[in-house]
Amino acid sequence: MGVPVAADLLPGLRAARDLMDREYARDLSLDEVAGVAGLSKYHFLRCFAATYGQTPRQYLTRRRIERAQDLLRATNLTVTEVCHLVGYESLGSFSSRFAELVGVGPSAYQAGYARTGAPMIPGCFLLMIGLQDRYGSAISEKP
Image: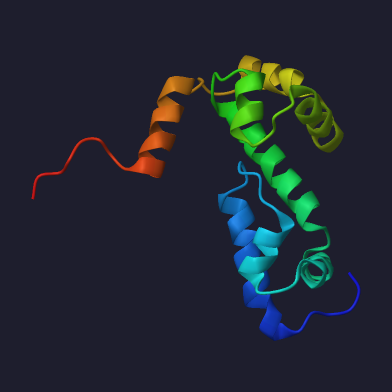
């Protein structure tokens, strides 16, 4: 992993990684993520790779694919819907990256779990929960 990173930089690197974990579906720029860490983008790139063993882009890609795996296993969303929910604009790019990292394409992955897995969560329910988390409940609580 190269030269060790100074301990005082680790909280900023963790904050940047946490941002990528939370906002994986957004188009995060290197400048934005490096800014969270309080570093220039080039210094951030070197420090992140030295600390986590992969570049920020590789980390974000892996995070998106892991989330896609969760959605494909547990919901009845289509591959295209999952592709867009995890931050990809191109189904072709998503499918090839998924197959590269997982070993099978997203459709085959989903089909494997559909035969053997637990009942699927309806996609409309999942989307409503996500909207509630993002925008709050439309139902006001009584005091």
